[in-house]
Length: 111
Length: 113
Image (cartoon, rainbow over all chains, first blue to last red; front, side, top):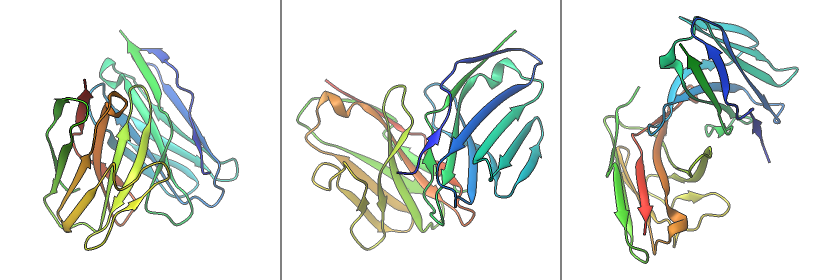
């Protein structure tokens, strides 16, 4: 079974700090990796996609992928209280179009 | 990305009854999926809704309990049949794009009493 592992948290950071969220996956041939943000009571929202090794930056968000270590991370710079949410890591095993989701990491940004 | 409208947004149902959830997309999409998210849990794929053929169900989910229709490339329904309190969950419609990205409807919060 293809698995995606995340620390459930909560991860608590002060406002303005860098939040670092981590995810590991078991399927070595995975090609597509995603981060979703889910506010309480809302549906998941795609915030980052990454397909090749290295870093991908979008505003305050940076996704990092290391396929050799089967590891993907999300950095949130200058964290804001509005970033408080659950962040879901998703990985498409092999050539599948269907993502496998991790359990999510709860992030709390306190003023 | 496509705009996905899901309804109802929430419902409270009596055990033993059935609820049909609708998912409407503003553009034609090939890939449409139904997920369940139980309280405090991640997303579990129920099935892939296939246009013009029977849905493809994941292990642990059966057609008699979760019948799915997909009459065209913009619409699908999921029915939760003969409900029990264990079916209380959030049900999410999702569509995929050519970059393997998934997008979600607003979700249906179901409570079975």
